[in-house]
Length: 80
Image 1 (cartoon, rainbow, N blue to C red):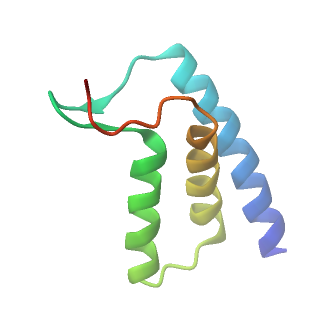
Image 2: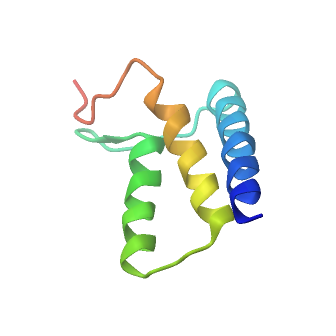
Image 3: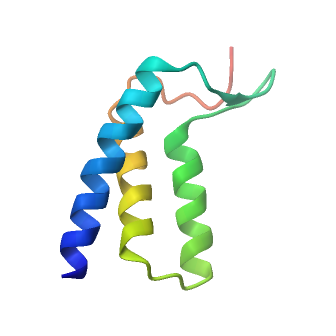
């Protein structure tokens, strides 16, 4: 059953992230660096892995957020 929770969390997070990124202008950036949401999700995943957090829902949400961002064209971290 854990896989079902993970799968539903991936789908829900992907759809919600797509909706948020298309309807709101929220960015984590400075004059030189732009942290995209998929990068932030990956950093949180690394932290969760180091802390040995095994929540299938949390992992599913972060996976959905990261996958949504990976489908975008602009992957540049450095701002031009």
